Image (cartoon, rainbow, N blue to C red):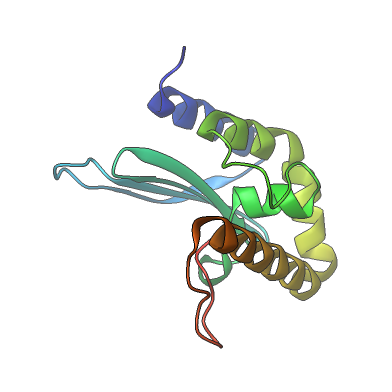
Length: 145
């Protein structure tokens, strides 16, 4: 079985094959070995983030408007708000297979897709908060996704 680091390294290939350029690579030599790698092409930014040993994938039109790939998966029908979190390998594979769809949605109407992403993220948060007895966020704040 491949490690998450090997999957992250392999996740770069479909991005580079589609003309994405690495625009930032930060590595923390501290205890956790945190890492951030940003790739950009036209109107889409893809971020690979290693936080305390766990890899995450975010995608959006800009650094300020990134959404976790699980949120994208939900909006595109690959998962539901009731599904458990997906493994990093599944997320990386989704980016490789559905990158064109996500780019197209951003190009067509980035504000409409952002509304869909925000709504799905909020619905997932609310669903999980009732399952795990979390307090909903204050009005005007956005739950992490």
